Image (cartoon, rainbow, N blue to C red; front, side, top):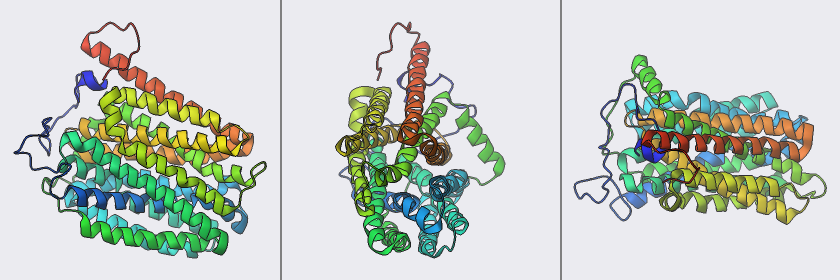
Amino acid sequence: MTPADTGASTVVDAAPAAPAVPDSTGSSDPSDSRMAPGGPGYRRMSFALFLAGVATFALLYSTQALLPLISGDLGVTASDASWTVAAATGGLALFVLPMSALSERFGRRTVMTASLAVAVTVGLLVPFAPSLPALVALRAVQGAALAGLPASATAYLAEEVRPRALVTAIGLFVAGNSVGGMSGRVITGWVAQEWGWRVAVGVIGLVAVACAVAFRLLLPAPRHFTPGSLRPRVLVRTVRDHLANPLLRRLYAIGALFMTVFGGVYTVIGYRLTEAPFSLPQGLIGSIFLVYLVGTVSASTAGRLVGRLGRRGALYLGAGTTAAGLLLSLAPSLPLVLLGLVLITAGFFAGHAVASSAVGKTAQHGRAQASALYQSAYYVGSSAGSTVGAVAFHSGGWAGTVGVGVLAVLGVVVITVSGSLAARRAAGTPVRALSLPR
């Protein structure tokens, strides 16, 4: 993407290096050996990363739909129980950058395989946690292990997939995230209703084991990976270069704010639906997360949205859809609450797919670090949303959680508008109106 396309300044990196993959824009070039839809290995790659996304989100949020049961079993408050989610996402946010450095040295597939292996092993131990502190500690370790997946997967796609297919390929990976989040919550809801939350998270651990094995068997070996250096000085310089890029900074902030909304809403929604006037049983509350299927569709169609509206236009649409869902969810009617969740989910996954794919295209070197910084910001947003959303619910009810979400969406809009203004200034165009440039 050029500065005029994205809202970046004309200075992209302070210390540019040769890209690991030629920055071609002509995906029809027959000499380009990278994968494309319909080509060799593309389906295997897509399905493998889809399964990795399923395992990642199923494990990462395995306790989220079970928080009311965990609160009752362990005798803790909603805000205390929310730490079982925040610890996992916080561990991922903290370790994603170091894990991305390992993937630059040892390879994307190697790091993703090792990360899944550790995460599923810990997942089989989680049901046996004797107390909340032990459960939180195990979840933090699990999140740290999963840190090797998101940034490495995005970097793998940026290197192995042709540029014009990149948004679609990342959208499929994000769609796997949505299926994992949905299936994990639905399965745990019904299993926990019959056998308790410990059996429920154990079942998710077994599902993740199957996904991890299939992922390793299916994912094609990388053909365009060039090992990098593990020297701290090189890593620091690469991170500094990415943080000096105004466009990347905006994308990181957008990812964090979108996830603040999503993390807060889905951490608290179980508590709201167990209370009057809804008073739903745990199995039905778990089934509420079937709305994640909407996210699967919106993420996988993000490429078409960008083609029609441009990246900033797609971000405006995602933010507006999310805000509409938040406001609609305030209604004391279950059908309207469900419709609100549908809109929140669709807007979030579309915005996330657009922003994360833009990071992969913008970074011209150190793609794993660029993606890691995005993922770190994204999961910091998840941890913040889970914790602040639960505190807001405790003090102000569902309206408090919605208020936090609306503020985060406004932040997305402000940042996106600033990108539009920056693009106009970079192009030398007078700023007369805020249109939706491509």
